[in-house]
Length: 116
Image (cartoon, rainbow, N blue to C red):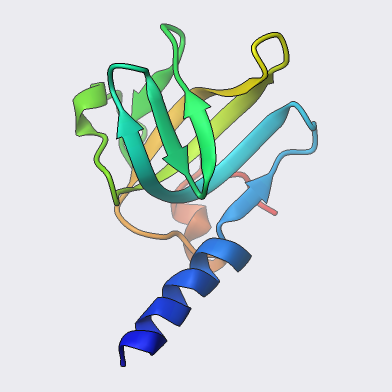
């Protein structure tokens, strides 16, 4: 039973949660917050580290602005990020909190998620 649950989580995270933008400097990703450090303005989603700055905007699943304190470890997010080549890191431009993993059939309910 436990192996089945772990396999399902692994499958979801590895095979279906990454969605890349056409530009190699832009990354759109859906996943679970693995690490969250408010002091460093940093979070890790699907083993990819993102930083945020004063230009980053935080939204709930309906597209309404929220405060950063709503971010939680193990919470689902969708991030629109850019590659900061100068500092060699990914900077989140928009972070959306999600209620759960959003599959292909449900994405029409969330217009901010890029369609594959």
